[in-house]
Image (cartoon, rainbow, N blue to C red; front, side, top):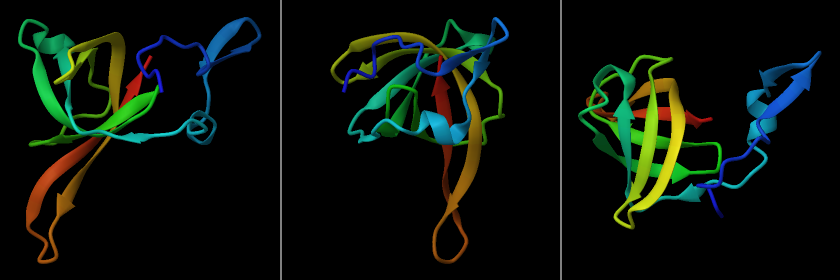
Amino acid sequence: MDFIRRSTSDISVDLGRPSIRSAADRRDGPRLTAAGSLLFAWHHEHEHPHAYPAMDVSENGARIEVSCLMPEGLTGLVLAYQPSGVRIDRPAMVVWCRAVRDDRGVLRHYEAGIRFF
């Protein structure tokens, strides 16, 4: 899968204005389990890129593991996939974030859903 290729498949035209397709519509492509990490430059601190373990990746987004709760709507650029160093350079946004707990209810980490544009 070439998840790096920029795609307009997420955009539909309604009366001449682009609109984002529904969540069900955009999940028609395969997700690949990832073994690396994604490098992000968030808009609020673009000069300090952060790498996050990628859990799965598709052409439209990714699920990453994070150490803290990320606010929905946080935006930035996904720069590259590591360790390969493949450049992605696409705008991205956090669309959800949830806590992951063990069997006793102890917080292990957070997972965040990232949408690529």
